[in-house]
Image (cartoon, rainbow, N blue to C red):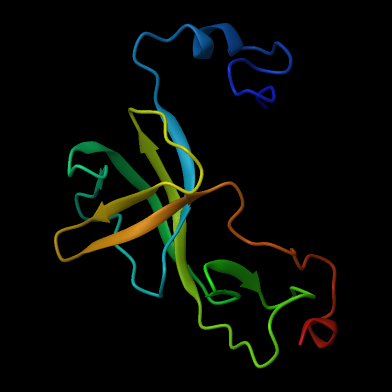
Length: 139
């Protein structure tokens, strides 16, 4: 894990020096889209910045049917503060590996041979995780 200003690791570990001193570092980020559409990672996928420059590749892209957006915020099926009558419709999400440092909340595009999708870099894909909770409590 990084320190508060994201400039160094909080402790040393095997490989921390190599990661910190890499000449051409790569960064892995989670992303979430705005709807169910996704790209195929079996095709040649690319990550594009706001100017359309190729900055990396899509590692994974799936549809999470347990989350949805409302008023620019992501809620999960188990979010205690989700709006009344909120319908979870699912969102695409996954991980990208890029050659430039990105900020949480930044919009990028992921692209395969068929489509190009705007997604947002996020710190946490699924709020209010549901592990070890009965489904009846979440609905």
